Length: 322
Image 1 (cartoon, rainbow, N blue to C red):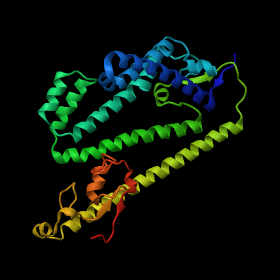
Image 2: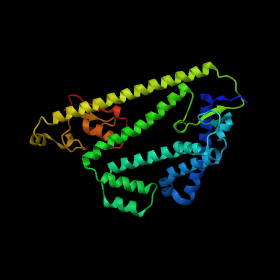
Image 3: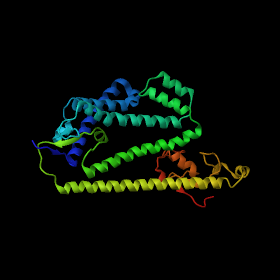
Image 4: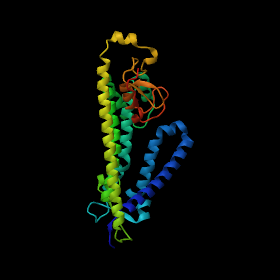
């Protein structure tokens, strides 16, 4: 039986079908756990329930040597890099590990680091962590101890790095999908890492060149969009750094006693509790120092006063405002 590589539409339909059945399994597990354990426990363990549901789905299909429901739907089979043999059990296990467990671990660890960097060290939180067992509690305790050894300035400098790492992972996924549209191989990063690709069986008719060219065009547009996004983010970062330097220079022009005399309660920034410099406005109309509100937006994209959500690019720098 002739075998040829699976194309982009088949791989996408297979992934969509698998996601449909995985979501159904996850929803049923969530309802069952919520019914017996309650809302509080469910909120605490919902990520782990999703992970276990995905692992169950792939253990019953891929690890057991069968096609997934999505692969069966479009008539494709997994092969190793030689394109002649099905993947070994070790390779299939590595595929499931990279596809399900690694994203879960990265998400939990980065969120834990971000929360520990933002939170103040307190004995109450440590006692609560010791009394109740939570997902990755040992990892969280180790991160808590490591963060506790840092100074306040080091914590503040690490928060943007964690945010940049989270954004970098998202951009990596987008870059990988754009590469898939162009090359037609490895729709998921886990399959690329484990070297698992697909061959089609049954319908072995040649691909329509128009479809392949359409996906290549889509990949090129995705790369262009990604490049524009990176350019805008770097430009925004440079503007914030320039504004921060100007803000520091302008704040140092006046003596501290003169600043305190001219400051009034209505003209103070609630973040630094000093007179506003380079006054900036949020979409909801509240006023802050430019550096204060941009630093705030590095961790929380909401107004410090009314908690209204907004994107950092919607901040307005009020020139000549007094």
